[in-house]
Image 1 (cartoon, rainbow, N blue to C red):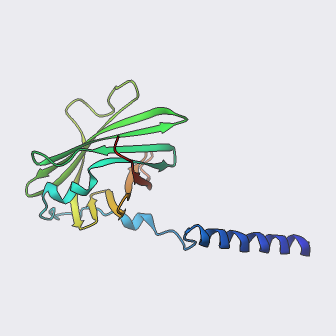
Image 2 (cartoon, rainbow, N blue to C red):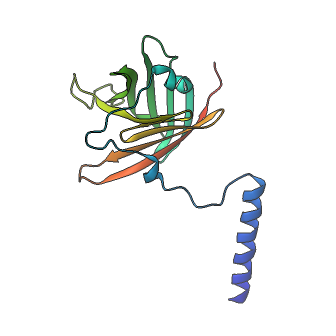
Image 3 (spheres, rainbow, N blue to C red):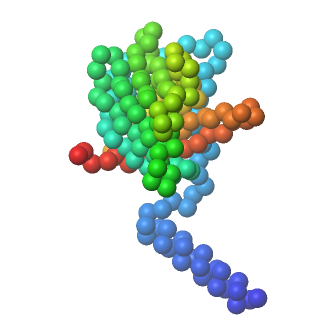
Length: 182
């Protein structure tokens, strides 16, 4: 038993050294629930323009709990940024999103429509899921239930509060790296 404990301690020590050498943080993960803000009753959206979302432009790829996640955003034009999201599992698409961030009443509004791989929509024809802006900083956009954070020159994280059929919610995090332009 003592030998097993010593081997376990050596393994932990090796993992710590490998983590430090690889630049992996061993600190406790941040509370991702706190990274997603909610609009309070009577709260209006802050002043913002589409230029506040310009840093999103480009192609992004990362891992999610369900596989590979990819997002692409066009440069701001005409008061909007248009984008798409694709979720892949085992090399096959599980769903798509069409995304529009637009200037709305002096602020920003993030709109999403979901599609199955066969392009059948989740939302009704004239409906979308809308996320009004709650807060904007130089490196983050906090929409009601959805946050985008620039975490480095070529990295970003997205956090979304997902509501399940039973009424429970959970925040899911996506960590992206900017892809090379083709």
